[in-house]
Structures are given as C-alpha cells and as structure tokens.
Length: 131
Image (cartoon, rainbow, N blue to C red; front, side, top):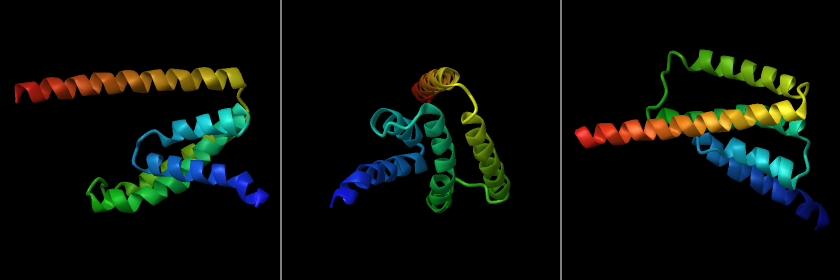
C-alpha cells in the first residue's frame, strides 16, 4: 500500500495536467509547479520533463482536434515533426542552462502570454461590440 501512495499523487497530477494540456488550458505550467513545489524535482529537470511531456500529450489531443475540425490535414505531419524535434532539443538545452536563467525565461514567457491573452481578449470584445 505504501508504494501506491508514493506514486499515486504524481500519477493524478500527470493525468490532470495532461488533460488540461491537451486542450490548451495551461497544464504544462501546472505540471512545472507540481514538479518543483511538491515533487521536489530540480528546475532544469522539471523544464526538460515538461518539454518531453508535451509529445505524448499533444499526440493524444490530435484525434479530438481533428474531430472538431481544428487541424489542417496537409500540414499536420510537418508540424508534428517540427514540434517533436523542437521539444527534444529544448529539453536537452534546459538541462544545461542555469536554474536562475530558466526561471527568468519562464517568467518572461508567462508574462508575454498573459499580455497577449489580454490584448487578444480586448480585440475580440471590441469587434463583438461593433458587430
């Protein structure tokens, strides 16, 4: 029973963040927080795990996105190949960068995404007010 309790929280965290990631809801960010704050994984390893974790999660999301008409069939293989190579290269790079630099880069990324979301939501609101 002790072994089950050891890996069960991580399994649950992985499943929940995987589902959120598959639908573009920030599961990767939550996974990083889980790994570093609760699982005690060093920042470099957590960043690398998160980048490699992207591969099966995105593959699992493909059927749902295809059913909903969100994929361009002609470009999917090129995009998948480029994503796999980029994730593997970034995971390798993350293990070599200093922790403070990784944290700074990740913070800048989160801020930029937040600003883009705010600007995008404002544009959508403005265009719906006119129409």
